[in-house]
Image (cartoon, rainbow, N blue to C red; front, side, top):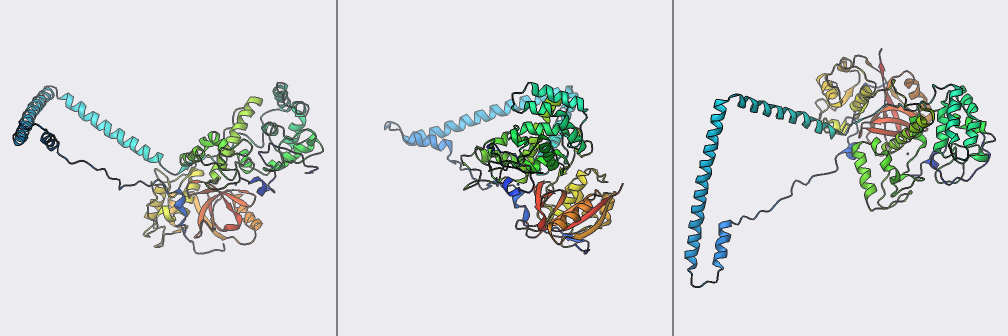
Amino acid sequence: MNRKSSINNSNNRLLYDPNHDKERRLGAFSMQEELDEDDDIEENTEDLDSDNIDENNEMEYNDENLDNQNIEEFNNLNDHSLNKEAIKMAAKEGAKKVGKIAGQTATKVAGTVTAKIGMIIATNPWILVIIIVIVIIIIILLVIFGSSIENNNSYSTSYLENCSEFPLNTTSLSKNEFATFVEEYFANSQSSYASVFIDNADTIYELSIKNNINPELVVVRAIKEGGSPGGRTHNYWGIGCFNGTSSCYSYSSFDEGVLAFIENISQYSSVDEMMSRYAYIGSYWYNPGSSALGGCHYYEYIKQYMSPSRSAEVEKICLSNVKCSSSGGNGCVKTTDEDQLAYAKWQVSSMTTLRFNIFNLSPAVCNSYSSTCTLYSQSDPNWSNIKLGNSSSTMGAAGCAVTSLAIAISCLELETTLENFNAGTFVEALNDGYCFNDGGNINWSCSKLSEIVPSLQFVSNVSLTGNDASKIETVSSYAQNNEIILIHFVNSKHAAGHFVVYSGVSGNSFITRDPAGGKISNVNVSDVDGIRVFKVEG
């Protein structure tokens, strides 16, 4: 890829060069005893409910007796011709008589009504049966909906695997069909680069197919970038247009520009993965935000891809009066990996819609991925207080390893012998099989584990040392065999260590599924010290 010159571009949004991570992110074991401690006790303060309820609120009531108030009012009368004591006694006697009469009347009415109801039921006993049935139905409904409400408050989130609605490597269109759609779309376009893409449609198709890239993506991404900077740069895809700078890469020909874009995106396994790396929302929730610098400007678009708890948190930030610049400052809130993933998902959705508008192709169906993948949170209130074996450690405080394994089982849709599999039922079953020692450490080779998941077999406990490249090479060698990999790392946030599920690699980070909050997280390769590997049979 030849970079000839830098061309000003004032509308930078995306980056297509993994070697410039800092510019983009202005605003993303040797064999040991097969016992592992879920050693992350201090890690989960971030996903505990911070909305503490004050149970000490008290209401004060006025215990003054109403009769005494009335008497006090009588005493304040300034009528010297009346005897105050006589008035006081008369008031009390009057109140007693009225109360007595009212009580007698109420008793009489209640007795009459009860008698009539009893006569009706005695004459028509089927009415009583209907009443009993209705009560039972109401109780059943309360149980059902009560359970649903509890589950809705769960911190665990459903997650569609790295599936993308936009195919990265293939197209169902022939070259003639592709060229026809491109010509029809750009014929009605006012863009300055319309004729370039019409004239080079065949070239785009041939270069893309030759390099196993979907030619539709080359067109859609260029349109999304506004053909910027285009023209004599032959760069219509924002290649090298780093956030915060005003220059982009330049190429000697249109063909060279297309090949540069293809080269950049060929390293990814899906369009979603590509966009999670390049479509960056910023380091802070810039308020009010902008289309060029991200932040709160995009909240309304991406909130549907966030977990309910995170969406509510960001909404509160963006509705606040705290103004925050793209570079941070007092009161500014940093974006998270979940925010970045949501932004990438929205970007892909927008691209998929444009793909349909141009090529009349519906979103791809991801049959090869799980639609029931659940990112369980170890602090989910449904199981956070479950003890690990006979230890004093709980799932919420130290259950990262077992919760990570539950996530992997869910996302691979492995068959289990549990009627209702989740992180809670999983750890309870492991407790029944004595899979934890007295310190809460899990025995990966516990026979109960293979009983619960017959296709799952523990392979090895591998220590990782050396530089980032060697660690990535080791992990990737296991990943090629479709094995489950649990990554263990230590950093300032998880000083005692933490387990996550390996999902992929992006630069010098592992993309993981994190039980600390049930979310997607990036882990620095340099922080990783070991992996636990499981083989899936069949």
